Length: 152
Ligand code: RB5
Image (cartoon, rainbow, N blue to C red; front, side):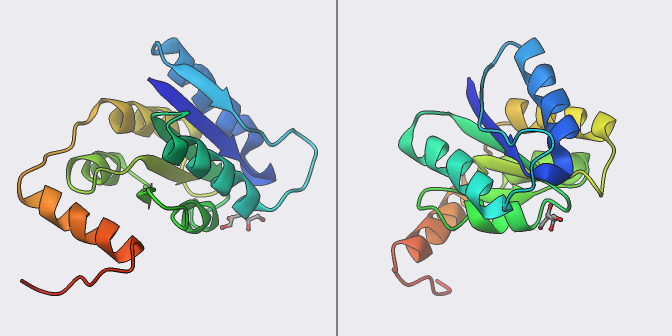
């Protein structure tokens, strides 16, 4: 797969480690930065990765900031993006299996790099469960389009 990746200044070393790990697993990586030593605004980086995924330039995206929260909020504003902040094996697998997440976000001030590498593996290898989950994900996407999402 083609994986778009980016981080803000809080997670440069961690992003580079995750990018190397993803490449070693056989994927192509499109790295949007940021560079070491600069102070940036995480929404700019979340948006770049999200746009790459939404346009089809990349199949999935991985984002890292200090908490994994702000960059996820930004990515999720782009149409077509289902971004999830994950902290452990369970949330990394579930964001794929139940939510069909196409962008995964992690916090470099929350979890160690070794955990990030494992969560990246789970994000890239876990399939979407479909079935009842497909209807729910459909309702998420309908919200994005301004459509109603009401209990059936
Ligand atoms: C940067 O200091 C920090 O605010 C950012 O990395 C992230 O944690 C925001 O959600």
